Length: 448
Length: 175
Image (tube, rainbow over all chains, first blue to last red; front, side):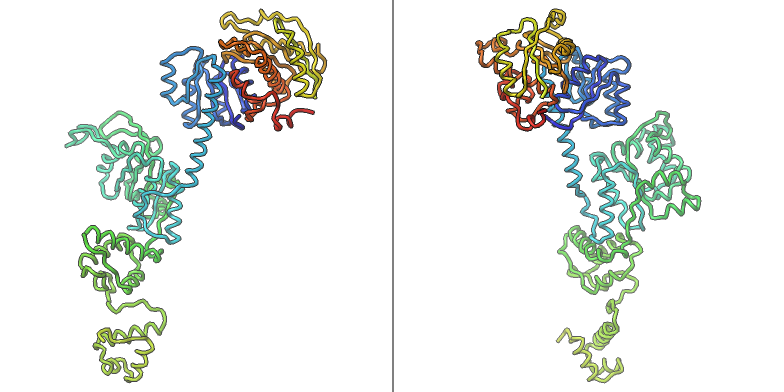
């Protein structure tokens, strides 16, 4: 017999409670009884049961209503409804409300044993299933989040953790660090992934437009509103609402937003009907919201409402190790979209890119690579294809004096077409010294 | 281990008592007595269900235990037993308590349209009595298909198991 399974029996008849209690105790279950729905619900606030066996007809709250309340407390609860009469409509209602099964009293002992065993099996399987899911969680749809640096690994770990919850998330990071990509990754790895992810770029909209975008509007709400229109809150029902550039929202809209976030209810512009929507909020900003709160330009209550989980994205310059991966990713992406052979990139160019601080972060790098492929020779990305401020074909990142000397000697030799006499003169050394340095640094004329 | 008193009630066939006593004695290695009390089974008849109320009968047997000093008592009947929630039962007991009841009624092949088989019937009765007595010694249902404490909701289930306690259940029994 199954061990450690727990059963709650809810029935107003003492003889039924006692019979079932004795029956299940002999089977090795942990059993508790309650004589009405109220007592059962009180018990369920402090204890969990694998199976709840509830009579449909009880004084006060009936079994169906109790079942609904149990389901609102714990949607995975396995509830079996019992009745003295086979009433099909009540049975159907119980099943529609998510009851595991419906049984008519008195039961055949064998049927009861089977029913409870099957229900216990389902409880065990679903427990095992969620246990396994937790063990094998791996993020999906993150192919466009590139990087295996410790900083990005930490971000992805945070995404993994937060995706399973329903908590509000705020993503902070400089412009171009990929905040929307992270929002998408959270959504597509969350239980809400089958519902839409609705993005709103708050900074791109005026206050009145943002209001209409978020809340929707009724027909005739303003000039030109010929039809009613669903707002983003409504569209995100069941899914996720991504509010980008949240710091740009006006004070008036901050109050409106706070109200909706607290109640998940709103009224369309020009409308009167209260609409409910179940959405998760992910907000993003490149500003330091806390200092905006201190400066009085962002509401403190809204800040705390949004700042449940904070994912901070590193700037590209903080994760230089990821740069080669990103460059390769963008080269592949743009060569494919332009229907070209994949181009190479000179080592020097890559080094130059790694030294650059990318104020525009990954977005800037992407633009640089796209431009370089468009204007380049179709074979490789050269230094002159980069629109960087210190665009210098002789640039080389150096640390030691020897490297600097090698680089300088090579650049002078290049400049004088590898004429040793002229190069030595320009360098202020004799030819023998120059030959020695060429030998030391393995420098030779590339054209032979 | 505590001694046991078997109490045949109403129309229970007294000729079965010797066989039953020996079988219980052999398996539980304890003294088994046969007791007698007068009990009007008609009082426990439910006309709506046309069956006998096992809860009330068990309580009555429990109340009579003082007559049989320091022994566990099991009332033996030949009527169709029910408890409010189930269509029928073969017997029932107070888990870890002093009293149990068991009925021969549904153990006969004839109830299922089959020819009488005395050996099979007696074997089923012994298993049912041992099973309920096992509960009075605190044993719960056992997953071992051979063990007499295996839950049986059909007579065919009873036939599948043996008339002995598995080693795990035996270890739980008092010595």
